[in-house]
Image 1 (tube, rainbow, N blue to C red):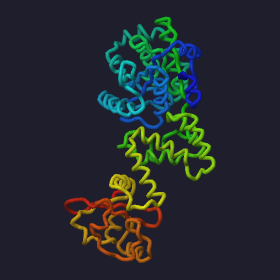
Image 2 (cartoon, helix red, strand yellow):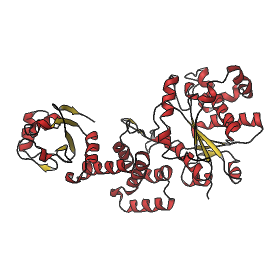
Image 3 (cartoon, rainbow, N blue to C red):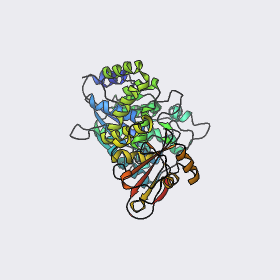
Image 4 (spheres, helix red, strand yellow):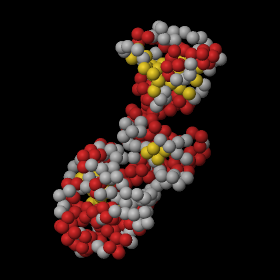
Length: 430
């Protein structure tokens, strides 16, 4: 079985590691942990780097600990931040921490004695007394040592509170606590966490005369140097309520060609040989976006499930590939309706609601006059078929029993959904 270091190196996950880690891994399985900041109620795609690190730790025989920062989240990590983080309430931190477990289960096995374990550091930090902390942890660090850490140095000009200044000591205490209670000998995290992690190594060395280790991952940026996983609309979240499975799938489809191979190695468990074959095939025909499609399918399957991935692919094929609408099922059309302007109509309206009414209601036409001109010019279609007259809509027009797909030109869509009950609602931009 390959070890964690060799896998991390081969897949581009390794930024730095303590010198003794390679030798320690030869002596048998190791318990390692990574902390996650519960400042939001979902992980985002940038969080997948440390998640994959924990997953590979488990797949190479180690035992992963997931530490949700219910305690440290009340302090705030200054790493990579230009300003003080807002302090969340205890209730909000607890709610955010509870929301992460289901997402992590798609990458980690939590079953059995050797399975991954999720812990909230609030369980040991919130009851920790100040004098006890200063006596057992604070006395092992000098102010000059702490000032040398990049997370502190980068904030000295703009200002850093004592709360955030002390964050590295709190994280060091986490590592020491997990060493005592779980036999944890490894902490992993982004490269911006090196200073905090090595503070924990220092504390364990001083209190227990023991050697423990660190492994960090590169911080991902886009080809243009921007933050990976962030679009004009914001972060790409794993929660479908924040980022729909369709938008999640499209994010990976739209990656630049030069990024696809790296992301396949980082974010999937696919064999490197398969990735190399896919990239070679992609190079022969880049227009098919084969590498991006493999990446998007693999990750959408894992995060949202195969059914949602199939619907996302089918909706994308309609919007960008001209796939025939009469073959689309209700799930695909519902996905489509969530991604384009949509409106509703009652079934009682069918027979009296005209195509002109539907075009105006969904926003595809700004007025009835504009709709009539467009129909006369052949600029609108209903369910993929050009309509040359203004006629009433009826139940026979409904796709999958509920949907009317309206189209202006080749790429502008809207959906009118026929429901039960009274009058229809106005268009909603998605």
